[in-house]
Amino acid sequence: MTPTVILVGVLSVGFFYIRAKGYFMSLNILVVLIVIGGWFSGRLAQKAKLPSIFGMTIWGITLAFFFREYFPPVIWEMAPFLKSLALITILLRAGLGIQKDVLQRVGRSAIKMAFIPCLFEGVIVAVASRYLLSFSWPEAGMMGFILAAVSPAVVVPSMLTLKEQGYGKRNEVPTMVLAGASLDDIAAISIFTVFLNIYLGGKVSYLRSAAMIPYAIILGVITGICAGLFLSWFFKKHFNKIRATEKIILLLGFSVFLVQLGNWTHIAALLAVMTMGFVLLEKSEIVAHELASKLAKIWIFAEIILFVLIGMAVDINVAIRAGLIGVLIIATGIIFRSCGVFIALLGTRFSSKERVFCAVAYVPKATVQAALGAIPLLSGVDNGAVILSIAVLSICLTAPLGLLGIRYTAPRLLDIPIDERTDD
Image (cartoon, rainbow, N blue to C red; front, top):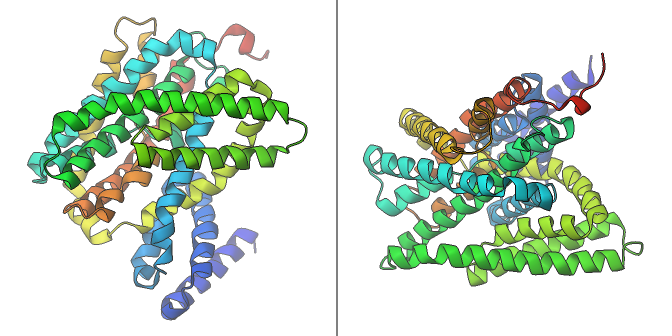
């Protein structure tokens, strides 16, 4: 009998025992189910050649289906912070993986890739939600720009791996996608926040809310630069006195503070976090590589927590009712996003194959949908449950398709320079 079979048996017995004795569902037991069950379901998904996050999300949905009424209330109080911490982790990894000289080469393309596909998808999904789901315009805008964000959980690790393997190095395609996708998330989150504020504020003008976006982005960049300069100076000065683990604690602490500062002042806090990582890499490369290595390990845990929690927040009955229309809206959004990618890359040096790869790489959705999907519901938005359900549906459909697409198209669409290839 293999260890896997034994583990499945133990989990199954424990699962149904707890189901029968629901009053034993303490926070400790729930955390065990989230962590161990999430890890195991992720491994099962990998065995099936699917992204691990797909299995984790399904596991969260399963937990909610059987045990929702037994969940300790404290888990929902902790969930927003845990999701935010996971998003911070992956954006720090993105910032620590973008070098200044490479960014200068792809900067203009990355900026266009950050905004044009996002706007194409966000607008068409908003219009579709308005007329197919009878949402109000603020609700439709929230739906549009939740779905309009590319998943850093899928894209960032994938692009970092392709960079290491040398794919697309001639035109720095992975770096361009990495930077564009990360900024795309900031744009989507910023516009989503505008629509949420409009919904909650009632009489707040669209123009005033939209005018806050440039303010939030500029101050986010400035704040991230200042934080990055301070940390790079501090880490270099105390390089031999502070262990790598202590450095990562300080980095995450600063990042959480930046997010809280963003909540107070309405700056683009996640952009500040990514900028801080970028400045650290520029000013103290040795420290940056040390931190990136630690963050890659932390992400293993953060990924499980993030995607199991978003699955647990799903109401399966609402998800079923929104199913077919949700699929249509998601598919329409992806088609328009792909059109936006090709338009963003018009007049650039990228080949037709590289442009097709960029469109494929912009398909997966997961992290932002997991982090933001429940916010409308928690904020009292009338159609918040439908928004959450379609957000989760987009994870289940596009994350596997996007990851498989990246894996199988990269060797066919991206070149490897001769000096990166191994001899026969």
